[in-house]
Length: 108
Image (cartoon, rainbow, N blue to C red; front, side, top):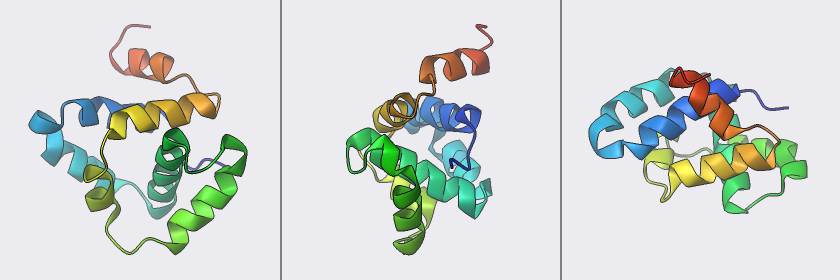
């Protein structure tokens, strides 16, 4: 089960798109997530880049927990195409990234 809301993932996506301006803000946001939210976020990103299938979400989360050797913020900020992978991961899990982003931007 995903332990992070689509709303929070959308916040990360939006900040990651503006990494040049918002890196400090994104880092702070990631560091304030609890451990379950952080591992779920990594799992969503992995699903989005094709390392796991959507039906393997639980395995992706367990792997993220087991392999967490670097702070999550450092790991994610060093990941190429972070926002694209998170969007693809949400979409693969049946969560509309566009709806979540629109809600954050007040377009709903």
